[in-house]
Image 1 (cartoon, helix red, strand yellow):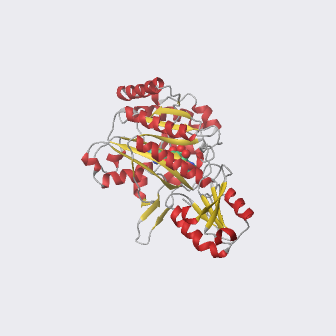
Image 2: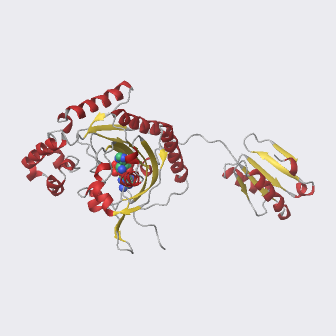
Image 3: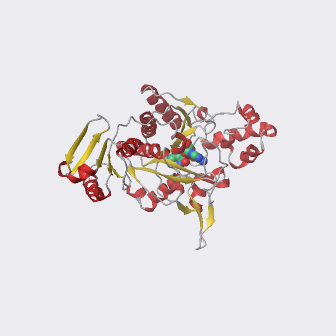
Length: 404
Ligand code: HAM
């Protein structure tokens, strides 16, 4: 039997209801914050991800679904959503138009990672990208929006926060860090040693216990920020404080994508095991220019739908909809007419085969219907239908024409 590929999942009952609820809740929240929907292709030129996510990142270096298409083009399935949206933003010349443009999106992302709990090769993100607003209040509003989404979904989290500086302060910090890393190089793992040259900031993120101990007193970026980055980070933390939003400063939070400047954050959950990040994002003021557009400040985030699916508390749901059935096969035509009329307003399920009243009632109950309506022999002769409200338990017989 052919099975779904390793690390890829079908989303079916009972998860499908939670999946749709997450997307709907997040979309409604984003719309209230002024975001509009955007859909971009799943497949893009590989060069787009190399230039944005970064060639030295694991995502591009090891995890891309990359191939040459029939026309000889080097293409990749998107490992994340930001790069494609920045491309669309530039391609549609919004960078030259100026002003603020805010987009939300959701859909599948692909990373050829080693599958484990909470880590899939095809997973779904909901995300937002805001272009043209340099104020750190926009970063604050994005964090507030994620908080709103998770609060509505009933999910607990911790916010981790860091600043990754800017071209003014990052290079100086980077040199200082490289110097420190060279001092402890011999004790660090192979990956860290490779990264000292290619991407030293990512060394801070190593999960290896020995490396973590050795890295404990590495210099931290938040203590090496330039005046402007420092002021912005101070504004952000004091806004969070004044709104009573708790966070942890995490100087080792560096994110796995290379495009960030200044604000970087992650929302983590303690209830889902090792893959605890449920959302991540930050500011990326240089990416639009880097991909050939007019310099445009930007900030955004994405949340992982599969990681939160089991944490969601669905709202209480009463019975709804109508179940229609027959005890005489000749009544099916009448029942189908009723079904068509009723569907204009509510969910209708029709059982085509003849069943006993007891069997119909059981089936209606199982599908959570509010009304069970059945035509039996007596009803057929009198152009009536037998109706039971499964909530109030009230039963009645009404003329088919009067069954509103
Ligand atoms: P990211 O941190 O790579 O950021 O991914 C965002 C979220 O996607 C993670 O916090 C996690 O919940 C989920 N996720 C990532 N990889 C997997 C996986 N293999 N299986 C299941 N879930 C996963 C980004 O993708 C950035 N584009 C976010 C962003 C938007 N930054 C600025 N704008």
